[in-house]
Length: 415
Image 1: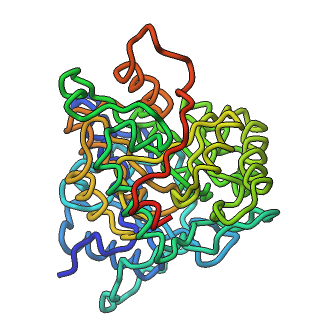
Image 2: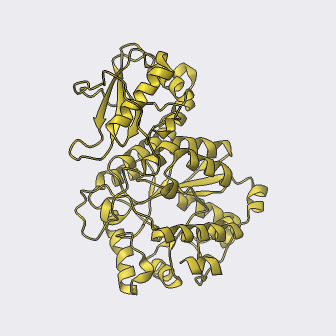
Image 3: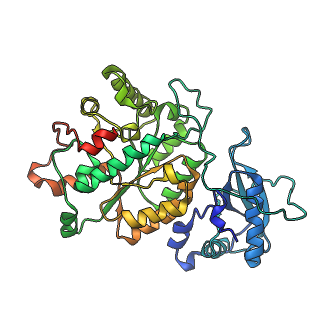
């Protein structure tokens, strides 16, 4: 039998949030409640997941009224959500716990139930379709200057990006934590020092987007888990979605600069590079952000680009662990990579545009908490790291401005 995760966007969204609630917090709903049981690419996939729930765990499906609704009613092909209305008096918190424990997705939606469309449940259960987790419905063309904002943009990472990202990670392993994240710093902190200091800070960072559906739900998970994160949107896309940027800021999250168009900035002349950074700052500041961190698209940079970022009062940043969510599009593999590679002091690279990342996020958070991590924004992580890297009397409010390093041979070749 196929595992339930093969339903492309099967979504245990509230796993961490529900498990964090004490048992006494569970209570019966005063009225009908709406459950979200997963996000899917096609309507047939959603009904296959519902049928799987009924066959494998009929007691969990008992009394629920399912419906499949589009994620965006105005546009075709944007995916669908499998939702179910629970009867009055049902303890939906306890039900979701049981569903999550059985390997299914479940999220109690805060909004009131939507009017269900006419039921289209098949009279006879068709043969389950072959569902492959290789593609993501959020995968669309890369943004371009002057975009109209109508597309939900997920960056397409070309094959050579894999070599670049692997080289960045390999280079970071040979450096200390600070040197891996801040490519042009003259300071560093080794893992042994973190252990001696009992240092347990970690940072979740998200690139790209915003995607009108996925990014918003990632924000919901972060807020429910009470985790501050750092978000690096593509400014030409964010320009038309200011509300979600404002909501990130209002919730205490940090907004960074990921350029205007997510182009490979190395190929541009200095004036164009500066425009990419400065124009992105202008757009984001218009929504109330105060970007101080710059993450180059694809992690690709040159010493001259880093120098321009510094001149624009930006601190260039990378990461210590690439979750590879942009490549694998598989929640289980994302979580397993985090469990294997991440630890105390890690800065995780994730993306805000992939439903598979959304799917994995609660388990990523739980895995990092199990490793003893306390989550902070990336700016706070860098500030606190500097307190270990330098004597307190020598601390400065901004990162030390040092000569840009060319990087090791492998990274230079990839870049």
